[in-house]
Length: 529
Image (tube, rainbow, N blue to C red; front, side, top):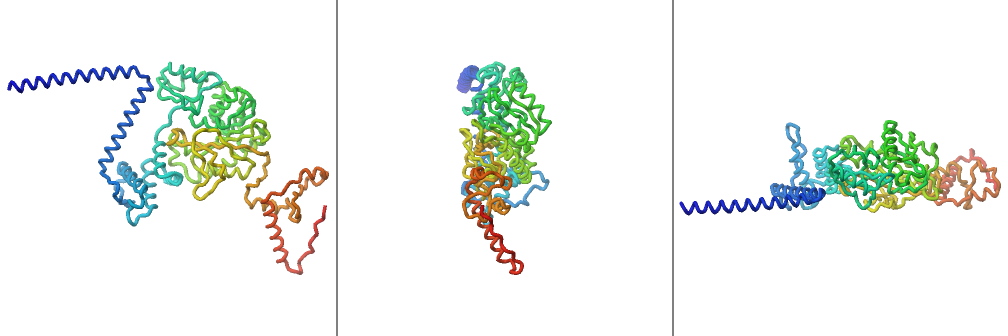
């Protein structure tokens, strides 16, 4: 008994020593945490959270007890719960299994099941688990790989970081950062690619109601909205048009880049959005801007030519699902087609407003907050055939290249100079940016047009089908011009016109041969000039 009492006393002493040691460690760690900066403490918490998430994922994988070589039996679509309430945990497990099978489909698929069967079930499960309609899920799977689609869907469930843009018309970024840090705002520069952006982690005060905000020292603006203005790069003293300006984030950035010189036409079609546009222009002190309310398609007749044009076109919003979750179920193929049609009309008007003879400008930037190819690369490829423009480098140092082919459709090779931005890759809203250089102010079809348009021009009589020489016939309205003026107006006939000319001549020959001998008329010999 005495020996047992001695052992218990020793255990108590050891326990007391352990407690004292742990208390010393806690005090040291707490003192170290107090010495750290707020951003360092937040980084430690983020690291701990990620480590815990990885441990949970490993534990979940061990619980499933799945071997890599197993063949997954795809359940029938009829095997659902009787009460109609989906079991999200079971759906999540099924999604992981199908993704695992699709990675090594040859060895892991069930006999008698095709890839379309697995994809169809994956579309249904993803739509149920994330709350999308089947169209968008299928569209994402057609555009990206299965793994990247999963990353995109997960990124759309997370809110993008809060970013602000410094108004360099009133303050420098360093001065603004110091003022906000003193008010309890935890922030960092948004990245090396921007000299005016700040990333806000957390704040003790409402970031949209500080004295600096009221004084116009900064504006709340998403990081992706910086990109079109940086690509346009307006110069001081130029005339610039912003075709869809509200609520004014891009317009005020253009004014800051131009240092309040020159002229900015801030156009907005929806009258209810004009108040926010005017308020931001006044708060940030932009004195070189004029607000107007027109349909963008009518601007070439209203404003005429300007040096540079920015068109942030209205779109389906498939790149900002994290902000507007209604896009998940409200968009369809018809909605994307309608948006694409409007975007083509607006882009044609934007290019018509741009002056190709400008000494410093002649540039147009087209951007959308959509990741749909029909609203981006397809619109850009269309405009290359309709106007005398070319795609140039946007000057953005990051972002993925534009698609040159999509589901059997091939686009112009220069479309790859456009830039795409994704939530799961760049941690910003999905965005598309493309920059054009206008080569001439012609509004007639260019040599990139389809053969049908060339043939229509030939059939209209504009080009003389009877001339064998390589000249272009003057318009009827210029028939009274002098011989010297006629020589200046003559140009070489493009190759596509020659081809159309040959086809028209062949059709005329077949018509003459098919005409009855009695009804044939005497052919008129063309008069030589």
